[in-house]
Image (cartoon, rainbow, N blue to C red; front, side):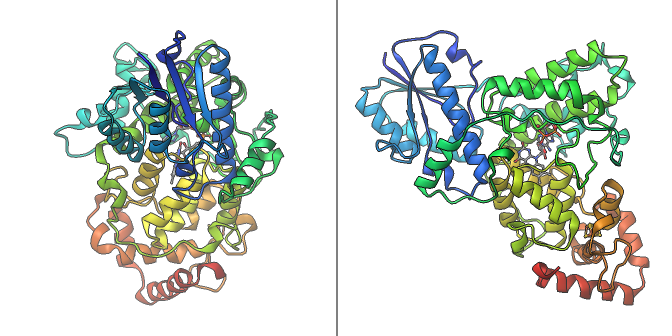
Amino acid sequence: QKTLRLILGDQLNAQHSWFTETNESVTYCLFEMRQETDYVKHHIQKVIGFFAAMRNFAEELNSQGHNFIYFKINDESNTQSLVENLSKLVKDHAIECFEYQLPDEYRLDQQLSEFCNSLDIETNTYDSEHFYTSRYELKEFFEGKKTYLMENFYRNMRKKHEVLMEGKQPEGGQWNYDKSNRKKWKGKPEIPHYKWYINDVSEIVSDIEKADIKTIGRFKTSTFSYPVNREQSLEQLNYFLEHLLIRFGDYQDAMHTDQVYLFHSRISFAMNIKLISPKEVVDAVIDYYYDHKSEIDISQVEGFVRQIIGWREYMRGMYWTLMPDYKTENHLKNTNKLPDFFWTGNTKMNCLKQSINNSLDNAYAHHIQRLMITGNYALLTQIHPDEVDAWYLGIYADAIEWVQLTNTRGMSQFADGGKIATKPYVSSGSYIDKMSNYCDKCHYNKKEKTTENACPFNSLYWNFLDDKREVLGNNRRMAMMYSLLDKMDKSQLNSMKERAASIIENPDEY
Ligand code: FAD
Ligand code: SF4
């Protein structure tokens, strides 16, 4: 039976059972398409990274004897649409059976199931064999429960997959070492320099230019540091194990002007396009930990494992539980536009300048920059979640909707009314100062609230609480902040609200 099997750009899993043996009657197809480059404006390095990894993948599997049809972005036979490309191949190659791996994105899932309905040949779907959990496992886990508490899901994952367990108890006696993961980095301990890959992506860059794909962000050959094949992904993982894991937990939330990556793994891009699986990453971390137990503390390892078997699987499960309605939720009824400086980094607020420039330069920012700098600012200035989503989905190399949307609209913008986060992640300047050195060199004064050079986050924070009292006032986790707000001198609150209004109205002047 002549079979056509589709591989999507984020399904580059050479370990998939599809590839255990070659089969003459099976042809794989993989397309670079305007449909995918244009649904949001992506960072140039994200497009380069995807195309480079896709080309490498097809080439490698082709050399192992698998038949591949690969459409480059400027190929004449490329219609730039998934359905049209597939329809054409089915017809031209007299295909008798069409198969695909379940996509992680709702949009593509819909498109492919509609396409299959339109075909009169046999069609089959397969699991992508990447995640620990199946698509609806989280939904079943929380069935009948009132909340979707990540911690409950995470503990269950630890038990089910026997990760860091001693019998039925968590290794070390605690499930969670979050409290010890909050150190500020002050230049020490030293962070070993990265070994950058040297990937020649010049052909891809010229293809992107020729196709006139509109992108955001900056690109210098020297800054392109994404692993674009399996070997580089494993190299990156090993680098993390040998040099960074030892301090990962301690400095997980730290931010610093001299360090873009600190002790973070930068493994998200490789994992999200499935060059490497979460189980491989977690197993490698655990093995390394057991081999180096005298040097590495459990808190560093647990902190990392929680991100992968906890947060990452949880976000995917929440996405499939709550889509498609999730994409339009706007619980706080925010309506403002993102300031221009999100695309230029041109602001006097040093924390934003640093985090946005990291994002523009590297298509990367670590979690706390995304959550407590750019996300915090967007929420405090009450930006429409559609605007915030579009920026996050475009700018980060690792941004794919299942993980971007749940993190942005849910965790960061509280637009789901608390399904993912139990309270909004907002803070004044004092948190930013506690976790970074950004305030030291800022134009603004972190301690001031209403003066001309007062840190904008301070007035925005209290203004936000005051503006959103109706929806947040009854949230028990916000009670302390609302009681402080109630005790605040009214004239001081009014001055802060005036300053906040001016920042919200003219964000690019601050
Ligand atoms: P590390 O800090 O080294 O963590 C290791 C791994 O844990 C990551 O590679 C990632 O796979 C996983 N992880 C950690 N936190 C999360 C999380 N909250 N959700 C899911 N997985 C997590 N992550 C993405 O992969 N794609 C996104 O589009 C994305 N958008 C985000 C948007 C916002 C507003 C926020 C607050 C977070 C977002 N995250 C996203 C989560 C997190 O910021 C990134 O996974 C992380 O910064 C990637 O860098 P790293 O590989 O160095 O991570
Ligand atoms: Fe950011 Fe305020 Fe600190 Fe400046 S003073 S870096 S604006 S938190």
